[in-house]
Image (cartoon, rainbow, N blue to C red):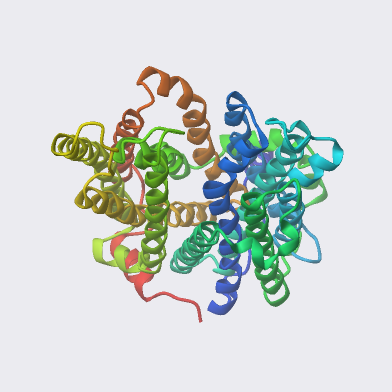
Length: 513
């Protein structure tokens, strides 16, 4: 019997850590920590809106571009579980989560310097301005870009785990904290897209435009300055005001020795010891993100090609469509922020967390399917204009109704996106608390279900495009099928963290004191 108990304890140690206090912290402290998401997401929005043209400006060969963008999911797959594991075990006098958040913010500043000054550093090292390919600038950019993704992943996992710690293991407060995090992600998106859209921002920083860095490059550099200033300000404010309660290290010397095995060995042990609810959560999350990523990667390209009928580098229609897609992303972020504040109301109104998540996955499937209809309307609109116009007339954008419908689609997608950014992380925190698992490691493991489909979509996008002649619609249809499957699994297999009635009431009435 004693041997069995020892074996059981050694297996559980992969997951179990000393849990934080059961007393929740005041709401203002939760808001301060959640606001860090605005700084993190500001940088992500800049990546989506500005970095792709910047990569082309530096002369990165197209065949290598996909490998650069893979650094996000690869770093997420490795960094978040490792950082989560060590933040659970950390016994620093500064706290468990705060040291990792501070280091992540500092690394973001380093990365922003390398990315923003890549062209200048490359020119100083010997790149010729007249040449299309600038290898030294590309090398600096790639290093900075990888550091930025690693740093962002160092920030996000500990931030969400910190929010769970501040919630005092209360399910309702974890839900409110993750909803606030999702809201500040939307705020960061809006700020990032707005900064990227203002083409004269570099005039605020006259030194940003140099011989090697034109106005577009200088504008990106200025946006990155603002991004890092926002992130460092929010992080510093949160880390100074919000203190972690000391968690005593009650592990025995024998248990400490057992934990000195390689980190990946213990991570594999943690995966092996995951409770069944976490495995189902991982499956729903995997299907959910497999549905999201085709649209997230190709949404503006779909607007430029399928909706506006343009081709890359030919005429103005494609660029007009991409700009319209950027406006759609802005509308999406606004709806995302508003919905994030209403997550608790939705859970109360529709009778539980799993019903809300399952329902919005069907809404996601419907919206992705609607891209087919909008595309067909756009093609019909262009044919109608061509028929009524004179021969050889300049191709025109689709009719106003089609454009409004496409923008409305972007906006409506903000509703399921708000749920995707909050409820899965809330459930992971609840399930890990119920099983005695560490918040950091559990959220890092959940991140695996996000980055693996991202890698699959990124790697398959090239052959997929070649198979279907560059059309985005087949990938969107595949996403719609995955979204429907995610909704079915959520409704039929995902266990409720507590009874639907009590959860709805708790999420609506619960809060921070």
